Image (tube, rainbow, N blue to C red; front, side, top):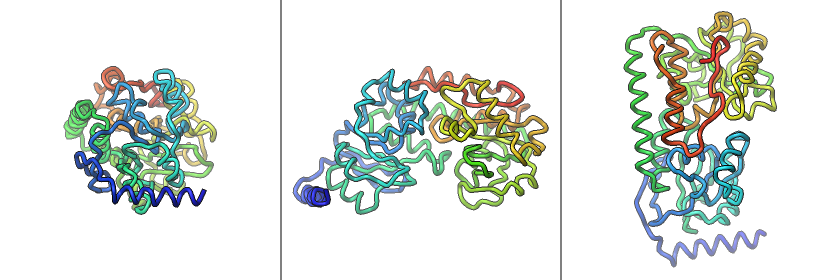
Length: 366
């Protein structure tokens, strides 16, 4: 096996010297790298199944573009995967490559033979591995829906549009997103209130408390929606862990838990595809009744909410922003209808609709 890998390495280097690449347009990826794309792009490999949701926004058949994917069903949820499988059975035959949650596997990526490898900004190949991929004729493009989702959604979706030939669809969706964000920003000028917020990320994933957005990243959504993220007061990174004592002392005005299908095993907050309102509300009640959390003023006043984390880590973030704005400023945004926004996205853009309970409140259906 080692001999085969070394042979493949030298063959790829030989290709670099003897075979000029068919150069296409140049793009800048989310690492700030200038990448020259192949003239013809038919096959891309992705290292995160959640990128399929983005592809589904801009392509009627997101699976047709795939040369490889990690089959990380836990990240997309079993319900969403079964929807994908029913609509596009070819997904079962797509070759497997390593996930961004694992060490980068050069052999599986080379075997998939993509024209472009679309990789997560947070993880991926080393510089030497990137050089080897490029030597074998595979362009490498980094995108991000997770490290700094609020800022990186638009350029990442634009890159996917370019790679798949769906630039117009990506532009159309981003125009809708920009219009909705602008409306929220304008309405917030009417309010000087800035309620304090504790957002517990992946609520209930472990027994101890509590993961939280910090400075930047997901915390930017809270700021944009007119709230004050208590995590940003002590965390210098985009996310981290808060002590329960600090949360109790801060006594936030609003408690928001995020969750998803992957938390079912830990008895945490389950939301999203395959979960109805009653099941989601029961899970939210459970995480809100934990020691320390149950004593917060937000809990006593009924300002307890649950949000599907996938809405924050995908181009569907505009739905999450509308939900947050409505929770934080119910009087200002009484007429805001995030459910209608999601219905519009499902109807006009998504090849595989986003279904299930994306958000929930203990006190109401909204």
